[in-house]
Image (cartoon, rainbow, N blue to C red; front, side):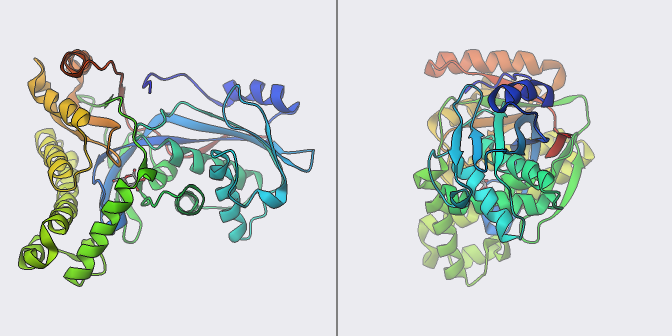
Length: 392
Ligand code: GLA
């Protein structure tokens, strides 16, 4: 994965679209990847998450197809795949087309009939690094297609369509966080989402003295591998023992009271979720006050809990997080943690802006020295959520 950014926009995708299809796109839409600042594995437990949108985007250009068939190109340089309209709402090959098929199916379930389209997709959201390239894909397809159909599909509805696509067409039992932030993100703001009722607060992140640093562990993750689904199951089992509808309703006292019945595994899984919800609240308060030290404490606590109680980190990611404490410029790092589903992917750190490039360089050097792995980083600020870039 390469975290460096290649510029993409309506201007860059349009000429390629014309080359493929001999017509101009009617709509070009974009939707971003995300980095989660805190609140991990809480979304499917009706809890709180606090992600921000990236400036890395998935761009989708569409126009009605004159051929009566769908014609899609999955990424620049690929060949066109042709799909019969009757098959476009069913899972099928190639695998990536399921992201589009799912969205078309979910739109049709809402009474929005999508005509056969010519579609070209381009993205600069790194794949497989826990930065939600798939959510960006689903939400941008949904944004483009609903604009093409003149249908008023709210951002939250687009997020739900993306999530249903993951569940039914991609076989990933994800929560709502990634699609939600991709659809609803706001430039210069993080977003604190209550996953129980999908209400949210935008939290300004405009302090120029602090930067968000994302570093790739270069370990690929896949949420379809079973570890994610297993964690969901542990949480459901814990709820059944505690007699609560979701871990949102549990407290640390309740866990202690039923410690023996829960058993070590479910106890630790549940303790992570309950504690993480508290850390999200503490982090939000700290950011609002500009208390970056306190924000960093919550991030470190989050990582420790994900590593020891939820067990979704891995050695490489743990190494990166530990190095943020020992590099020469460690004093400029407020806090660091793994981000996303886990089992690889990236870490996110809050760093003093004046030292962020120095910290990044030291981290890359130290990581190479420790594990012999070359990697990349991204210094970023909160980007904008899904939007139509151009419409004819
Ligand atoms: C993945 C899922 C999200 C969320 C995170 C963990 O990114 O897609 O719904 O569960 O893992 O916080």
